[in-house]
Length: 166
Image 1 (cartoon, rainbow, N blue to C red):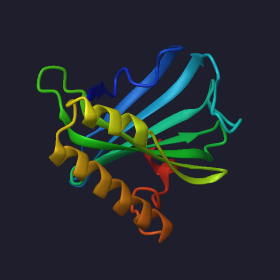
Image 2: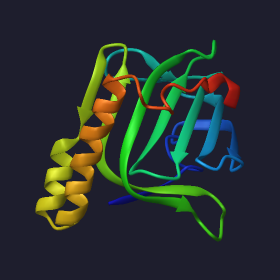
Image 3: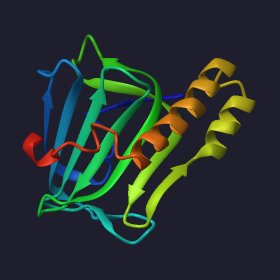
């Protein structure tokens, strides 16, 4: 597993950005990153996800084994949704920065549709003992349930008006 902190994740080629955390909701935490100066990031499908004036809106549900990230362009239109399947998430007690422990599986909703990514990484981590049998089953079940929920249009975080969080 890989622990990822919201203050550093997906900011490698970004030179200047604004970051804001909102801990006020009982059901989830919000992290908004506004890109001020950085290199463009183009998804494998060919659409731009990160550029100057773009946003990343990250939702950390307090329940469930996933987190959601949405990439918004400079017109505040969603370009892609990205769900990470996780084993744990929370707020670091020292830095007060949210984190999650990535279980490798990702669900992506892009202009080309809904896809499951990195099953091979989860299988390899499980085979190597980095992911227990229990966490492996949690990851698979979470991904299956989340994909069904998304297909049925029932995921409350994907259905949110993210522009209200900016």
